[in-house]
Length: 293
Image (cartoon, rainbow, N blue to C red; front, top):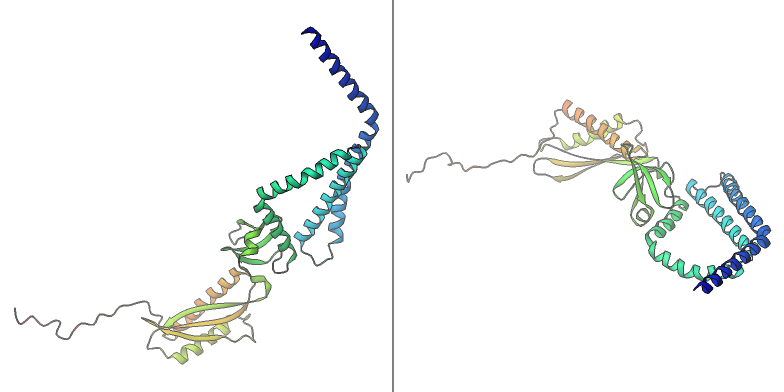
């Protein structure tokens, strides 16, 4: 037993001595490798900032510029790691890492399907022109101003100043309404008038009221007025007109102003906006007593 312990101790001492000799021999390479790594970190940050500066005058979106700068920074770090492995004479280790990267990449890809889908969608969203910073959009039942697009989600600020983070995949796969794609938006307003109303006068009055209320109504955009149906209690109509608006809030404000103005005009001209009523029709002899009794 004692002999085995002495042999083990001698073997450990020999191994430590061998490692120490290898460390001393490779110490210059280790110092160079450490210097290369530190320089690569600083170089990646510098190149990232330089890339952002060069892309300032390009037509790419800010999010796409950030993605390109980040990818270039990562490539610089990876190039430095391969160089460090060569300096340390770890080419066999490099081959092993490359061989295992395929299997590891497959496993990671299966585990991170959702995250990779959002990353890919984020790159696509950063490149297309249909959505930009500052746009007022509506997507997945949320509406607000786009304040950020990264590799994970689109961040929008709602009218109540709350932030909503929508995964990029959902934004890309679902319908997207961009109110800022044009400076003009259509306001649709529905209402009803009593059956005793002069329909031609109502149509003329509504168009005149909208024209006088909104200076921003597009001159080339016709105010559309259509009677839609004979309702249970009213003759219903729909009017459509264009205003200068780039968000849903501005459209709702314009609709509110139109409703107030039309209600005032109707009151001034004794035009009734009826509410649902029910008429009971009784037989003529309803009040007569039953003769048989």
